[in-house]
Image: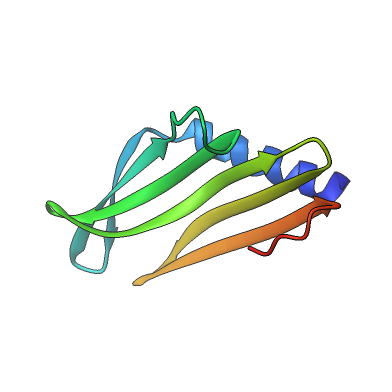
Length: 104
């Protein structure tokens, strides 16, 4: 459980240290990354994602933080991205603790 906490803390710090919108260049093309936070009262406790655009066209959405729980279980999804040369690499980590049987 300590490992999940430190991963979550590291991703949370890196998320808040970035701007809400960022332009990135992969090869000769430019992309815009927008950081989105959910404001749904009936949804998960914490939900953040990135959306990647080329011009006005949305290419993909990737979850950065998703935490949901009830009285006896908790589900955590952490994501990140990395740019290496002309490649965009997306990472996801999922963990579940508690009694309720749920899959990602």
